[in-house]
Length: 181
Image (cartoon, rainbow, N blue to C red):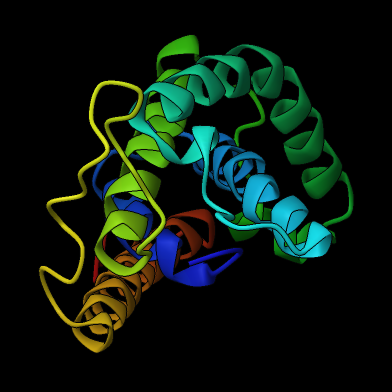
């Protein structure tokens, strides 16, 4: 799934369930870094396009880098997001710009490992356990259509859950917090 929003489906559920313990921005950064690899190899016309970063070892290294270096970058992005909101938008769309170290690592590790798991189902050139094994036991374990559907459904459920949380936040900010949804 090079550069696809489908990876964000499972993350939306995790973010909804554990907002303060999971950084969606660091998750996203991890996804982008991992998918720079197939983009590079596609641009070069080389095969395979999924190499070291599409192994669990490579994803673990990316996750650590993304958690450490990406934490301040993502915090800067979140501050920028908040600054660009109007007063009305800020009441319910502002986000806490501080990302805990734990949330950064949770987002990056989930991002890295879920990326490899999902891509292992659909890409024949992935060797998720390299350099120890060249096998990919998950290849076509379910159909690609089913994989997309699972990611889309988890994404929709996660977005719905987040929307409910935002609505509650908006109502509380409007002074109507006693009448929860």
